[in-house]
Amino acid sequence: MVKLKYNRNNQLSTLKTKAINNINIGECIKIKNSKKTFQIVGLNHKRAICWVREWPLKSNYHNTFEISFNNILIPTSCRYESEENSKLGNV
Image (cartoon, rainbow, N blue to C red; front, side, top):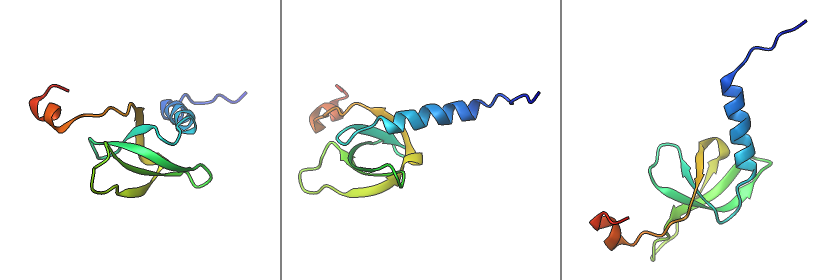
């Protein structure tokens, strides 16, 4: 009889994979090494990558870049913060 070793990391990986497969274009995410929120603008499940842009959108430009699914921490809500509210700490 073979006993399988309990591995908490495998469970987390499985849960994360399921969450990644459930994200859609237009949804917002948090990514590693950033406190900012990003919106998904493209997905490629075969290559395990997506294209994102910073949220909320800037009025003068929309930088889009590619990241690996491994860099996604969590899906989050796309909240709009006005600059005035964020400066005042009201958001």
